[in-house]
Image (cartoon, helix red, strand yellow):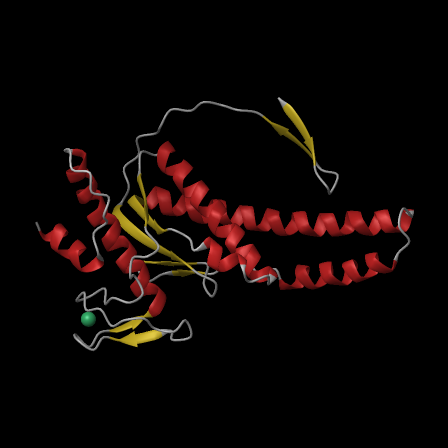
Length: 241
Ligand SMILES: [Zn+2]
């Protein structure tokens, strides 16, 4: 057992346990999840899950940090402020962790196959805004949690390539409408006329590619070395077979 003391003077005990996977069938065969800034997660069912609000705590932290900067180094008052800041930070991470556990548990219990999109980490870290940093951190943690819980409940966990055109393709008819700006939140397909919410359409394509990838994966196990992933339009064809 390891005892850990964190910056907010909290103590933790850390230890490892081994658990066997649980056999508990899911009610829904498969789901695709699009992770975003506006809504934390959009599911292929159309449901949007908002992340917790940290702006109040964030403001408090910034206020305390300005205070800290004015205080004499090594003074007791400064140490007190430092501790207050550390506690606010751990409050944020506690809220986030709680949220991520709840969402990941629910998604894994309900679905047999869970597909996420690989994160564009390098593109994201360029933006130094705290909100972005927090959501980026949240996505990583979410993915780790979902994967672990999939192992625990015998679910299939799939991550699709981030270059898949999930936001450029109609999830209804497979028509590729090309790149659309991030500010565009809804799209009407030129080919079939369906009106899509941007994130929901992406989530549905993620699910399609995920399922296609499953079939593809079984196929590649029979000796073929291809690592290519089915495109959303191909996915619908694969499912139909
Ligand atoms: Zn269409």
